[in-house]
Image 1 (cartoon, helix red, strand yellow):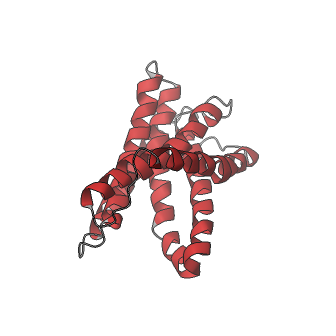
Image 2 (cartoon, rainbow, N blue to C red; image 1 turned 90 degrees about the vertical axis):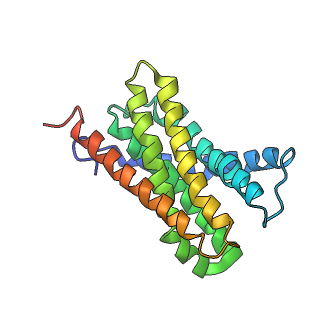
Length: 204
């Protein structure tokens, strides 16, 4: 979808690897730190699952990706148009999703990994696009901090909503909410891609 100015394959792979290794490490550390003052072990509590989905999983995982994009991808010379924010955010997100899926293979087997390949992996890509849209705008904005954080907030919001409905699966049929959240996120992601494609500074 990067129609007008392709990114170097080597750089894309490196972003993927950073997501697969560094962002997983950051997330793990954040989980450990958060679990000390905020242990959430009651799986039948809607409130605890809400906190876990939005303020533990959503923020921790998206923040771990955000750090890499903000301090490695965004300052790089190859990040030279807003659409690149989407490209690099998705690469980091797919690296994260790949490692996460490998972990699920060890815990739940190939069946779990296969299901996640059609659910969680596209979800991570969607969250990455939403974050990357704003981080792409931020690099060329005079209000970089706010625009960057808007991307982080939106990704964490949709990630939290997606996970929340899956975490409270003890309520019959509530899991449908996860796919509604993902569907809305996917529509917004598609719009984000089109906007940056059409506004590319390299478009002839």
